[in-house]
Image (cartoon, rainbow, N blue to C red; front, side, top):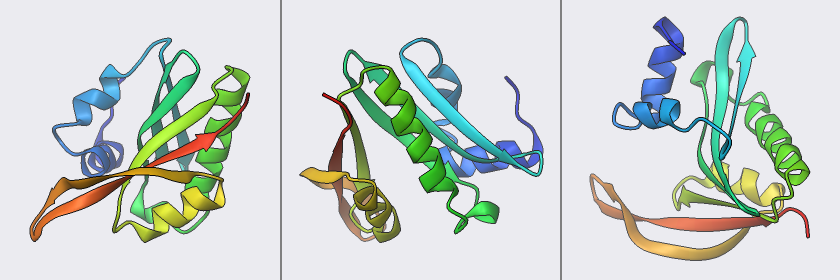
Length: 139
């Protein structure tokens, strides 16, 4: 799979140059990777690893040109449906404590805070907490 132009720039910005290889490396049976396209462009993507009856959302991003249109919610709802079909019981994710928009979206979908990793992310001002969230999917 090769990406050029706008798609590649979006991926590099969304996952960072160091993580771009992860996007392409997380393929196969253990992964559920989704993308949404609009106007022949990748508008959003999600990278998820499935291990037994649990899944971890590694990354989700919406291209800035397509934000505020409900694509993140649409992508997550589809992801949750697909995970339920696979018998996944819990979907886990981590989010920066300062990312209020993402936290509100996750909470609106039923995610709950499980724990906090203090000083997890380095920032220009020091460090920022990571919030670990979980969504019970099926039993």
